[in-house]
Image 1: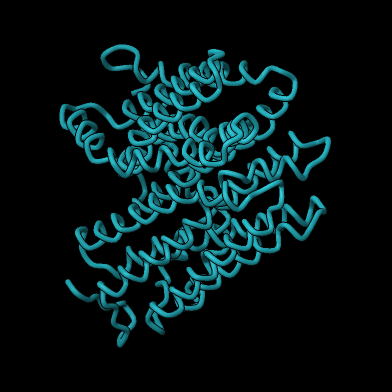
Image 2: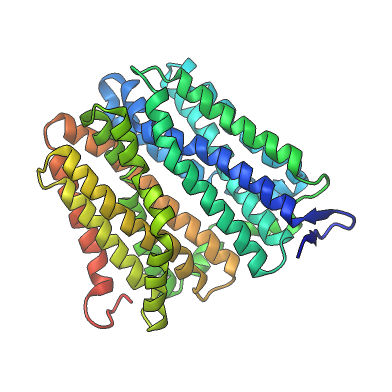
Length: 411
């Protein structure tokens, strides 16, 4: 279909125009995020003095938590505003938070600005999901937009680390954060120009959050608990890439080009290899393998990447090998999380979606906390290698119950 009509009479959305708008929006805002993430841990460590390990970990934890969940408390008020107001406003929040970050040296203000930027990211992601679900009719139309967003995200993630390496020089974050803020401003302008006036979320969005009981009701099912636990574990190890791994590369690799290549490797690999990996995963699903077992396998592969970093190999060799293995794990893990949660029995598909967000964000935030705090503490005391070995052990212990035997008790 070339157009869809929103529930409010008289508001027409033309899908080709919406696809273009969201593609440009995602390209800009994801460029901002993936230019920030490779150096965020290094920036926090550089500005933290003697307590670098603690403030870096807390900063990364808070950022990931806010980027994933900060929109939940305000969703009941979002239907009051048209998309053309709330979506650009979310990008203004991100631009202001990140753009002002280098001009404050007080820890509390730094965290407040970081959280403001993450809040904008969270609201933006929530509203875009709702917009596509409520306005675009049919799975093929939605899948087309999701595919375009995935392409834009990976393109931005491939370029962002190189831009970060060029812009973040000698510890001066002002050029880097100015470009990041500009990227979010461009995303907001794109949305302001491309979204139809008068279109707003339906009142059904108020049902997205109904207190903790909404999620607890979903968690009563064993399958939901199993899926949530392995998602938390996998996201915990996944989060090391932009925390502990980024710190290791930033400290131990002198070449900005090589640092960018190591951090851009997974997005490039995903762009080239995601399709054959997905085909292989789908074959397993068709033979009756449950999604949680594939999630466990991916978590185990994440563990192999961590093990490579802990074997005492030269840093560049270990980081290159770990990056390649990590990319394979990410291609298995990330799409399968959505597949696993979409199959959960429960009160509603919306409840399962909310549970997925909470599980992923919990694992990613805790992983960022450890990757920023514990790795930094160990690295400066000559024990960084043990951090990677401990992570590998965590991944193995989390995956084994799901993989042991032909049909494990957890699966």
